[in-house]
Image (cartoon, rainbow, N blue to C red; front, side, top):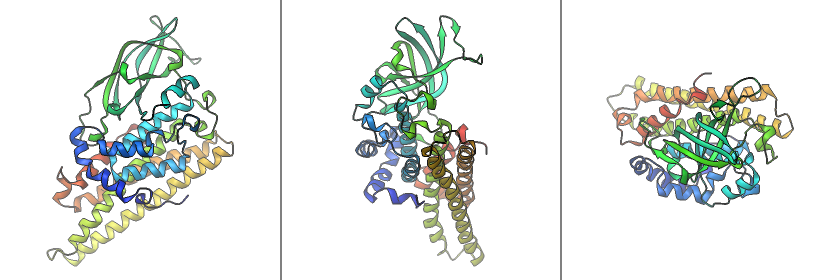
Length: 366
């Protein structure tokens, strides 16, 4: 697949609606209704839901390009779509009876956490669960929540074969969940990434699942792809989209500076050269990233799920893309003027979003 500018995958009308409501979304602390209407119209929360449950079941190359585009339009929206449709991927591993019930909803949205900060005590009919989890992006729109729990038999931890605690993911209906205000960070304000908790809720065994390839219920290629690289690639695409948005805004600012008499020719040339440099850097890194992602998909479809060399390339290029995107923004920022520090400006919003999103632990180190 080609690697075009992110704007190529969204209509001008979508882009305008998404960006026009971005500031109102920050004030709400969650995705704006006008943005959410597009998400439901386009079925973006179902991008990775199995086709057998009326999901879109997008290929990974298609997915990461679209997620980059949505994050280019607005970082918070792109992040929520990515995290929530990523949880929709669990539909390939949830028992068919439960999955059909969940994903039959037109406006289904799954939020959740990968932290094992809950306990599931075995009962005669399933489990009793208590726990509290942080950073559930899209929590305010979620119909269901997913969360990892340590499995216990009474007071005793159940163990894996290697002696480590047994941890399983669960899915709960949102009616059983309490959302707790917790997002106090400078960026990604509209993601609504608040905490949530459950207390002594009873669930049956159909609410638990595993996400290893051999545990998949739906046997199509998407649900054989390793979860780690799926997460790394989709998050990196988000950060790339935000960085390109920042660069696009810089172009307009730098064009205005070219007309300023107070700047010398040397200074004007420096701005031109810097913008060209960072654009070349991000373009080169994006191409390497998309080559790795595309190749991993080809390899997967050919049956080589455990090709470590191919999957290592996805991990490395994902981290490199996130690092390059952040560094490109940081090189441009000092030359943007006070508008970039104005919390009511679009470029400041993008700057805050990328510097918050890029703190994700999966992409911190090369």
